[in-house]
Image 1 (cartoon, one colour):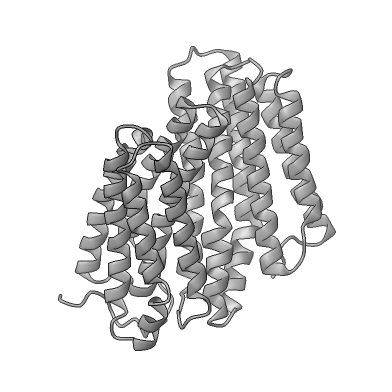
Image 2: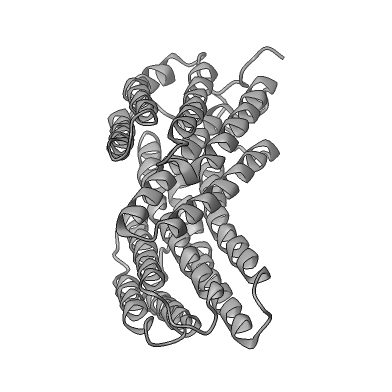
Amino acid sequence: MTDVAPDITNQDELSVSPFELFFDLVFVFAVTEVAVLLHTDPTWAGAARALLILAMLWWVWGQYTWSLNAVGTESRLVRLALLAAMGGSLFAGISVSGAFGDDGAAFAIAYVIVLVLALLVYWVGVRSDPAWRRSLMTYLPLAILGAVVLLIGGFVDPPLRTWLWLGGMAIELAAALSAGRGDFRLRAGHFAERYGLFVIIALGESIVAVGLTAADQERTAALAVALIAAFIGSAVLAWVYFDRIAEASEHRLRVTPEPARSSLARDAYTFLHFPLVAGIVLTAVAADEMVAHPGDPFETFGRTVLAGGLLLFAGAVTAIARMITGDWPLRFIVAGVIAAAAALALGGALAGAATAVIASGVLLLGYAAELRRDPLLRS
């Protein structure tokens, strides 16, 4: 088979392929390594660096979602490219914990190779559609410049490395904004499902990290309570997102015509789903701390990342709801603020499990109140 992709002018709905699911497995590992990076440097600067790495991983994963949404994975050459990207992502993943140390160059080289390969798949895949290629050219120059800056960042010493990686990511964001309302065409179901799967990756990282930590602990009642609290926290976040947010977002994407559909996908998914995922990862780090010290109150680090995670998650849900419905879910964002405040205020006095359950309960009550006021995100 010589074609890089099937006829991309056929915009019939696309299903997520096993090759894409296989590709996601590397990112389960990479997200876990981001959590390890945060644990090893529990400071504000360390948290910022960990979130920067998470943003970079999110961006390259999202680039493959956009590319494969256009070209599919029917072609064997596309599948081979995806497998090559998976290998590169694995090298990037194992370098995450040392990305701001001795592994900076290794991380940057692997990362940029994977990113450029995604751009190449996209460019070659739409070669039979001149209008699409012209639209893609509004994105590619800045995207390639951003990749170059990210690559250079791996070869300089911190803190300049951090600033160059921040600059590279800013250029990548500018590239996405510069694409504007070009002649892109998006398969809504496939796109929404892919982003929902990354939310599952983040939630799954929470379960894996907590399970691995618990496996090394003495089996006590306090550990059991901590595990239950950690599960409740993950379940609440999953419920809030998948109960209505995911479905309503996909529906709005489906009924929005092009070119507004691609702009909505960029804003509601590529941009706003990142703080949602970052919030899940931060709450997962807090849950890991809770299980590592069952029965004890949170240290400052634990309650801070829990509060920050809840705020990011609630803020992202609020912004997505506003974007797809035109209405502000005020009760939910108030609940998010109260939940974060409770985590900070109670975390140093109550056991971590009690703090986590109270904060999760407040968030869930806010969601329920929003549903009673008016079905949240009614399409």
